Length: 94
Image 1 (cartoon, helix red, strand yellow):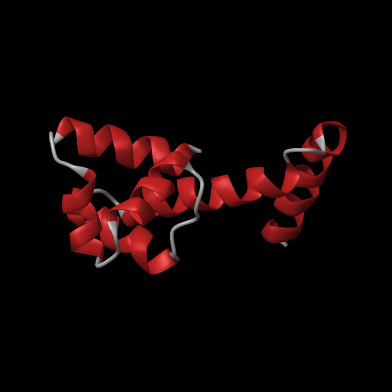
Image 2: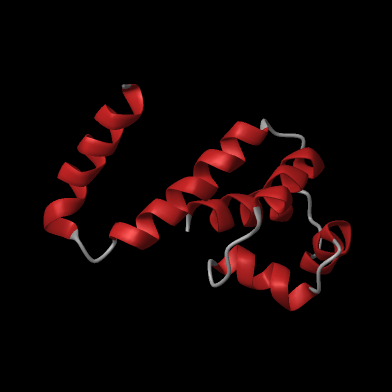
């Protein structure tokens, strides 16, 4: 839950409420809360919007968001996850 932890940290640093960020994203507060807790995946557009709101590089948020997705897929494959990631990295480089 790398992405959720990061946006929670930044929101708390700004001493703002979840409902304020939910309103900026035009979603309800429970939905935003689930994104922070990692119970719901944000849409790519929401990730970019949050990066703009927090004034951070969108690539930082997109990387964390993507890492969460990858983690979700491989979390139960501890023995094979490292090898699979190595294959993916090699494949992407080509």
